[in-house]
Amino acid sequence: MSKRKPYVRSMDGWWKKNPYFVEYMIHESTALFVAAYVFILLVGVVRLGQGEAAWNAWLEALKSPLSVVCHLVLLAGAVYHTYSWFKILPITMPPVIVGGKKLAPEVLTGTALVVAAAAGLALLALVWRIAL
Amino acid sequence: MTKILKRSNAPIFWGLFGAGGMLSALFVPMMVFITGIAIPLGFLLPAGTMSYPKMLAFAQNFIGKGFIFAIISLSLWFAAHRVYHSLHEFGIHAGTGAKLLCYGIALAGTVVSASVLLRIGF
Amino acid sequence: MSEQKIIEIEVLRYNPETDQEPHLELFKVPFTDDMSVLQGAQYIKDNFDGSLTFRWSCRMAICGSCGMMINGIPKLSCETFLRDYYPNRIRIEAMSNFPIEKDLVVDLSGFIEKLESIKPYIIPREPRTLEQGEYIQSPEEFNKYIQFTSCINCTLCYAACPQVGLNPDFIGPGAMALLHRYNMDSRDGGAAQRMELVASEEGVYNCSAVAYCSEVCPKHVDPASAVNINKANAAKDYFLRFLSPKGGSK
Ligand code: SF4
Ligand code: FES
Image (cartoon, rainbow over all chains, first blue to last red):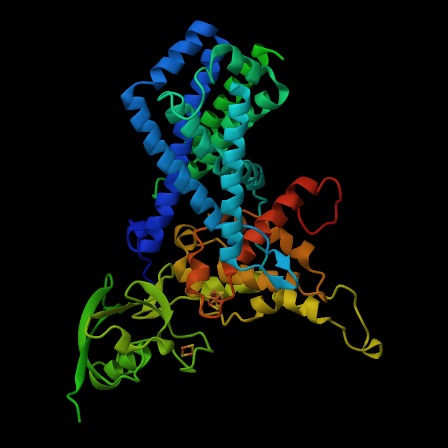
């Protein structure tokens, strides 16, 4: 008779056992921040569809100190999402070959972050133009 | 080995996840700043930037409409996919129920934003 | 001569014949600066407890058999040195995400099956007879897959991958890296055959891009990138299969 009795260890709390996994869980959780913001935005769109009074009430609600504090938190989450999204880009994207050589991960992440900053600023500029 | 392999339907959700993750990584931080901080505090942007006529015009514009829809819908699919995976990672194997709930919310958000944006007109 | 240094090594022990579950056992091991963690384990086996069970062979980071969790991190014990941990205690355990066979030895049969299932051999793109001579490959073509040939099947990447632990059927990083190695070989034409596995429920979509596998890989194979490139390939196959049916995948 076989004396084998392989022991399978539990996966409970695996993500607490290594700082690398803790960071993974934190960057995964940024999705909740993005979702929360998008949900607020969705309410805004619905209010916009309901007419001027409803829209102004939504704008007014955003002015409460609680709302501003919440948005500061959401901003932190959203920025971390951007950072972590582009940090893993070098492994989630097929390699970029420049001059016969694979682009270094730091270069790729750096470039992507610059592009993201530019996209954000372009959006700000566009909103500015609409405002004037 | 002659295991029967079932094709995964993940590419659909993975595709939406990737698109939403990318779009939100590019634009959501600035949008949070604009709508949640700069406008309410009357800071940086001119007063009336998000007044009703301006925003209505923005939402009626073809590109503006598309942008709002894409940000809301795709970001929700992105978040739904991550949350669904995280549940599995935390050892909650709620299976189909969790899947329906996560992706259902994303689908509802997609439908609601699409219908409102269509009703706002062009 | 300087005083003999002693390091504390805690070992996760498991004897399938007597134990219900694994437990830690502490050993005080005299060591010199040139001793690896593997040599620490050997010292224990030779001097304290001959029943301590672990795998090793080359002692030079090439056979891939001596992997273990060292203070919770998957490492080759033959290229990890006791001096880097002294005076702290060191804890060695069997590689995570594998069933423990005995002490530090894990059951690799699941991994071996996965390795077989990826068809880890060249499936010729066009059959050639001996008279036609060898297959010609340019340095550029060679560069496309060389990185993925460095794998030594140490399975540290499996020990690093929570998705493997959560779903033991997931084909996993190392096997995917090898699959990609063959797919990227200009002489090989088996990508369509291998797609069935890549796109399956055991395939690449189990990966959530934790990417710790690439971090721990001692040979810089970057298995995470192999897995993720194949997500894109499988998505292409998923959406375009109706346009250009090539077979291989269902
Ligand atoms: S990919 Fe790296 S970590 Fe994984 S088995 Fe191969 S050599 Fe080991
Ligand atoms: S003993 Fe061969 S890799 Fe460590």
